[in-house]
Length: 275
Image 1: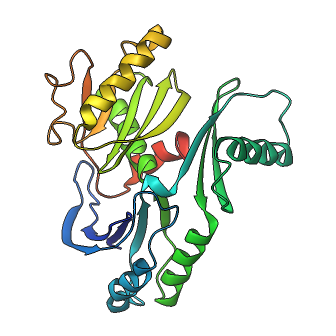
Image 2: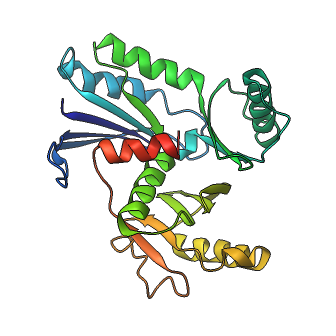
Image 3: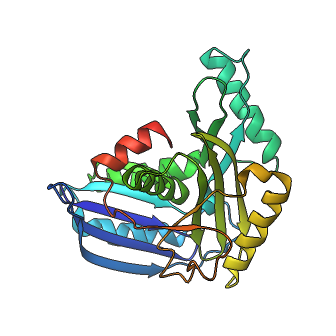
């Protein structure tokens, strides 16, 4: 089935249709792209109500058709957290309580019912958590079901960027070390991976000077954690966004080319690294 990708941010619903590639090494071909403007704010926890009418207008002509549906949510609507290894936390109930407590401590004022996904590391490594508003996920599933479309995959934008970066690491022979950066118009989501262990993840607001903001963040990290000084930056479409090797010195930038479809290699990486 072709891929229907719905990218949801506070100010737009973007709709991509891809013809998926079946031959190894081939990239999916984009066959259409629409952009629907939304009246949201970068401070909102949920998308604006106008999203649902726009989504209905998009899905109605596709009702009952065969599509591989991928919903990409802005990192604005996701919460990310890295929790340290706790040897005494073993049962599923203990883990669920540990994850929920960590999120509540980190994001006390959100007041949302969250659907939590955990990506445990190897023995002794950190756990990477991501949480999405349960109400938002339920409304998305209801909208797809109403138009007889499969539920597909729903992922925050950073998870998609991370899977593409990890795929690039494997393809180009990098070790599992680096800064994984997802850039959106008003925010950066930045995570540190060392020896396959997610050490931290954070979001920060940015404007047109986002490259300077990123370099300032990484420079501070170098002072606090000298062992991270030589880590490369994995950034999607770095060159085209102006993050050239010259402009980002002394940091090494690896230009991650997006794989438009969630093809088989990307899914394998996703299952191993990022939920």
